[in-house]
Image 1 (cartoon, helix red, strand yellow):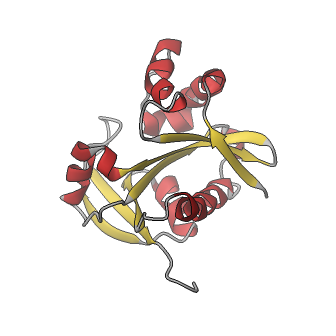
Image 2 (image 1 turned 90 degrees about the vertical axis):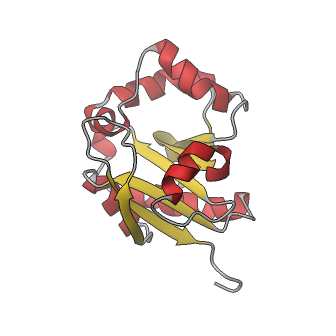
Length: 182
């Protein structure tokens, strides 16, 4: 299983729209899927106008998913909300992720994708002390993927959910940068 990445480009927006329309993604991401909405929400990162990164995930050369990676300090309101639940060290990074094709879920791809992104984050962001990932408690598949990828749950608390039908209860996962020689 070979996982590779590249930044999302505007040419990828039709694929993102298709993925965001899939029931297993739509339920948790609750994202508008019109051409205009996808361009509005993913365009700034694709053009480098926003500090977050939207990364297209490839498995053996085929696109299978998306990871959004950002430093919490670049989004102060979100950092403050999360800091009410768990300590947020300066430079902490957060991730959001999806597997787009429903036929590719349940095969360990998400776990491999997250392990790969954690390793890549340590290389790309040498000053990031940790990765914090909040997940709505009802999204068992997502938080189980984090656990299989080696991220321990460190907190439970109330955060604004992506989908208003969800309860505010979130689990927060954290992985710290490995020490020297690890």
